[in-house]
Amino acid sequence: MKFAIVETVVTPGGHEIDYDRILVEELKALGHEVEFYVPEGHRFQWDYRVPIHEMPGSGVSYDGIRGIRKWWRACIRERRRHGWYETLFAKAKEGAFDALIFPSATYRYLRGLRRSKLLKSPVPTFFIIHGLTPTEAGRLFEQGEAVRSEKNVKILVQTFARQALSTNLPNVHFCNPPAYVPRDIPGRGLQQCPETLTLGFFGQYRKEKNLDTFLDVFGACRFERKVKLLIQGATKSDEDAADFQRIIEKYGADARIEFLHKALIGPEWQAGIDSVDALVMPYPAERYRYHTSAMLSNGIGFYRPMIIADNVNPEVLAEYGVGIAFDGKDLQAFQTALETFVNTFDSRFEQYRSELQRANDDFSPRKLAQTLVDLAK
Image (tube, rainbow, N blue to C red):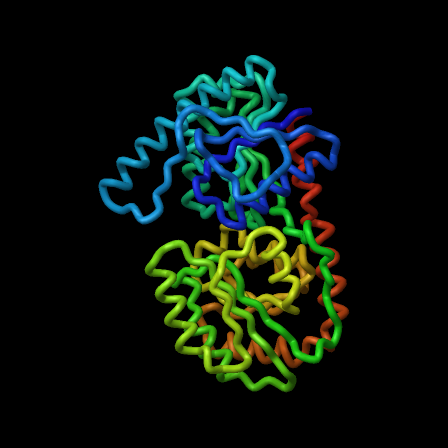
């Protein structure tokens, strides 16, 4: 089969790049063809080594835009999306591909679909949703109900929280989020008894990740072994960049802490994750309870145990012993979790190793590709 992926994110970060790689490389590994359809002038930050076709109309970004200007751009984006749907419908009618994938969709994609010819797509058309809050689920399922008679419109929800998001709609399918695995480097896997245990905090820096509090707690911990902390932060806005620089200046005197203010993509990202022994995810934002944490998926795929707030995809640590969870609203619980994790790392090594293997088996990225193939057939 030939799968066409529609990528419209104007400034994709590492998550979008890695997710598209999963789709491309795993579908190809199953023996299928893959190509991209993108807005006019779109430029990828990664060479996927597959054909790329441009659609009329450039992408629209909201970065740095607020108020009525953001509303106006949202209107422009909806008009452009309608145009892309019309282009894709014509290509599907021509037989240019056998299935169509929107890799990071929302309910708005389906709302717009209802006003376009693509609603009657002659090929399976997938809208992949990366986690849903209960409120978002209501909006999505409403749109799903409106298009339930269209047999080629398929909504694929990636979530760990299936019980909270159940539906009997025949066009809504659930699957596990895929693990992110090292694709360009030979990952070293989980290392037993490192002389210095290196913890890592990675990803897009935003104030909601509560980094100041994390570093204050880290400084107060009583560790019984050598510990190092690597803080990597990629920033999009000037405000976030300035705040991250403030943190570097505030905590940079601690020799145990290393900062990296830089976006990491591809091999650099993989090498960064591979350089640490464990991941720390003390995110207090409630949306992480339902939205898939890409860092958690990286932790699984790179065989890295984790210290993680109990609101971040709690079903994972409830089922797999891949780390230690703590009450994200309790600083003392966070400190206790950090100390316990570090001081018992060696004694719990075999548990982490076996449980990470089990999680990798269940969340294999190949399974996502196979799900798409099975539903397309």
